Image (cartoon, rainbow, N blue to C red; front, side, top):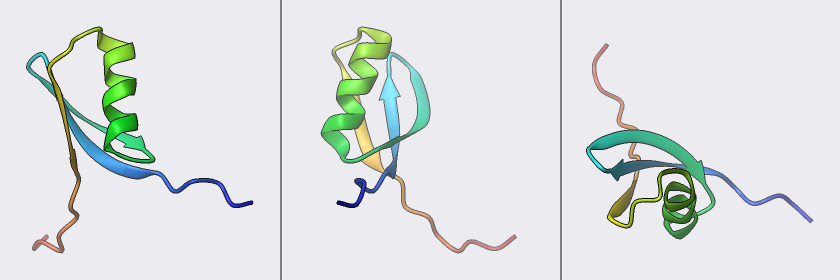
Length: 53
């Protein structure tokens, strides 16, 4: 059995923004609720683009 793949999500919660690794957006939101206790949280997939250096 292979372990689940972790993906990066941009979490917005109570004016904070940070990147979290989770198996899906629901897991990212559940972790943020447990960590911060806030109920208004969004989790968006982090899209890596090949921008200029």
